[in-house]
Amino acid sequence: MRKSRRTEILDAALRVIDQNGVTSVTFEAVAEEAGLTKGGLLYHFPSRDELLYALNDYLSQQWEGTIQQHAPRAIDETTPRERLAAYVEVAPLAASRAELLLFLETVNQPTMHQPWRGVMERWTPAADTSAEMSEDDLEMFVARLAADGLWLYESLADEELSAPVRRQIAERLARMVRNEETAAAPTSGD
Image (cartoon, rainbow, N blue to C red):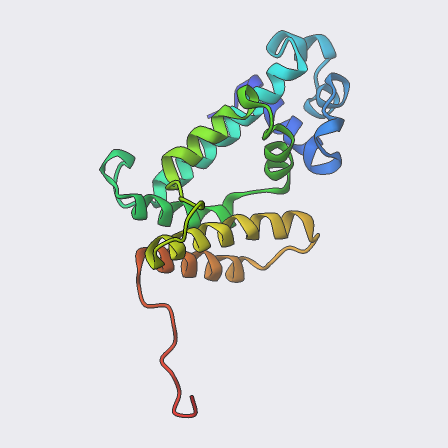
């Protein structure tokens, strides 16, 4: 199926962000990247804020769709642990530098950031960080921090991990959340 013009524009804006950051998202830069006139772009997105909101919405929907594919059942039929396991399995594999930059740029703008907030609220259980956590809650929170940290690491370190290493990390985190055995058996020298 052919992409809609709107989706082509959003993909072009993501390329602009990936190359030069969120501040480089101008009508001129996005129109040029999308092969449109500025007027053609304005037809779809009358303001820069509408374009940025649409990008957040577009990316968060893609992310949520991928997370749902990794969940064992529909979201309303899963446990918090199952939802988090799907999230930590996807986060290190699906997130891009452009997504991180857009996420960080809009995190303090509640309306703009709402699509991401919704995904996080649905897929990552809230942790009570005001008091000491149970071992179970701590293990789940550490797995989420590790998944989010890998996204940040790759986006900022200018070093891409190989696909097999990213997959290993994602699978390890998901096993951790599911409470599956992840530690190797101790050797006789331990």
